[in-house]
Amino acid sequence: MGKRKGLIRFPQNVFEWSKAFGDDLGYEATRLPRPVESPPGSPEKIAAIIERLGRGQALWIGGDAGDAQYAYERVDYRVVGDERFGAVVGKDPEGRRHRYCVWIHLGGHGEKLHYITAAAGYRDSFGESETTDRELSAIRKHAESRGASFVAVGSLFSARVLAESEVKRLSYPVTGVGMLWLRWMTRYCDKSIACWGDTKIMDRAVDVLWMLSRTSIGRHVYVIGLTPAGFPSPILQAEGCGEIERYEYRDIIADREREEGSDDDDDEA
Image (tube, rainbow, N blue to C red; front, side):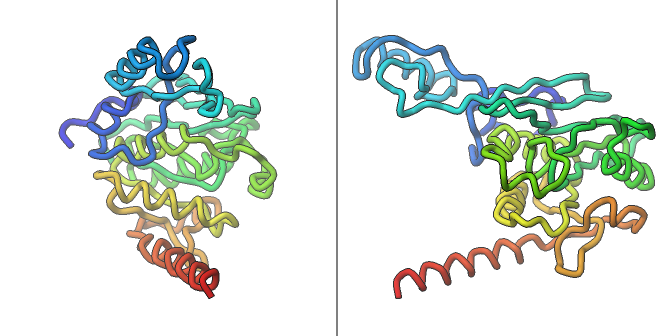
């Protein structure tokens, strides 16, 4: 893959994305082109499509004349801070706050670790104060115990919630931007560590594991420990248990494929 880009140098179009990962799986346009008023099929509209294709942008957007059926659910996000301490935050189409990633540079020359939790919280502090997120604090302690130089935290569900039970009630518990940043951070860091616990929405966990496995640097997913059910332990439960171990995520993917095959057989019957 060559030399890694800086953390904040995020791929901006499909060509940069394909160059970074060797495929365009999971890619969604985050910067949409300007809409055009020319009708579909006109020389002006065709020229606009060709220009968008050359730039690696989305080809169809809801603002184009006559193309309302292609309306994109625009997601706004921004990077705050810098490569020492920062976050990627945004809002979904309904205006609900999301956090796609948060990170802190610890110094030293150890590994860069990427932890993936179940859901994003409302607090982004890794320290110890009234405004600290307990989960982020536990992650920092665990990373420091391993001599890590950098810690990033992403989530299966990027919407900010107080409890995972809220996720099922949301129209947009996660957006395409969330998947893009999970994969980007997996590329940037040395290890991606699953610690989302026995989440109630396993389809999302399997999708994330599959996408991480497609990322060159993220061929292997790691865990701090396993719950009795065999899922990655939540970080607060696993704090202090020590070693990071390889996680056989392929078993979960195989289980889901078997379930989907069984459902198809039932439908045919």
